[in-house]
Length: 499
Image (cartoon, rainbow, N blue to C red):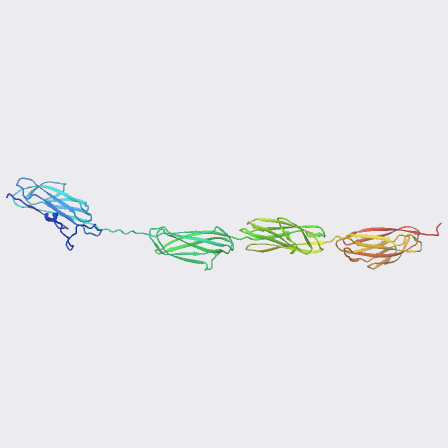
């Protein structure tokens, strides 16, 4: 073997083999201009680049060990993976060892280096012993895999809806609902549409199905819509809203509303009959049998001509000009009753109907009535007077019978019956009705009506036929006074011939 021995290791590379000159003066990659002093930051899509170098002495004496190094350097901007170095030993050497330990298969040495980050290197040391003189030629190759990745944020929109409104509302009142739609996802949602199908108890000028286009909702964005409806029918209703968006997104929300309605009933009771001048008391009752409160409840009771106001409970106010009694009761809760009392004075005979009514906000007027019969009290005064007293036997005298109705109503079918004593003889009788003389009894036909504060005069002519103190008796009765009233008048009949 000569004094100079050169070992040349051939490499199979993806990147060119670096020479000493290349190590000191970097060369531009093919198709790329001369690099500037500032190296650009690596890009995700930059090509990987790995260099493989061998370092060995120029010569070695036969019989002496030869140690050479294999350097694997990642000079690219990205990591490489599954790095493997294979080294085929020359035919005229004996393998003595390596660091790190490779896998040895005949004259083939293999190292599985795994990942090699950008800018790093691995050194492999191999020791051999030449077996004969001559040039040693070795071949080392490197294989690896690289990856190129990208980052794209995958987002997904997600809709959430809430709906708020009144839990209870009176019929006829406005019922506003606030619908909030939120995008609680990570990406935008386009073509967001609200659809609200109103139940029959709620009304909107646009109809039963209301739609609102919210456009696009960005992630985290919330939009709200206020839906103004009117409570139209009593009952319990579920109002549901559906929200849709592109990509098949859909959500819903609902709220329950109870539409209440007051229903007023009204009752009035009182006595069926009263005499004039007496007090009559009427009871009025208002009852809310509905599902909601009645507001601004008012009771009005106009008095008929035959009744005069006396008093009213619960701050009832009487207006003499209109003859109306008014109660302002305010609010009446569902199921609540209010009792009122009205006192009047019977003023005029007749049948009088006392009509009252109750009403409230958005509640129709409800009437109630009670009829009372008013009567006067007949108060008859009976007066009997003889015009001549004493009376001589054979002479005549007359009796005046006067009936005065001092009461407050007419008396009906007034009957006068006179009875003559034995010492008197009936001659004639006159009065407002016909008279009938039958023996000692004189009967007048019934007087159909004797008005209040009126009087009736009857006359009976008699003759004295027997001396004595005689009693002329009169009996009075009527429909209102079936038990007769008796009155007597004493008359002295004398005889001058008596001794």
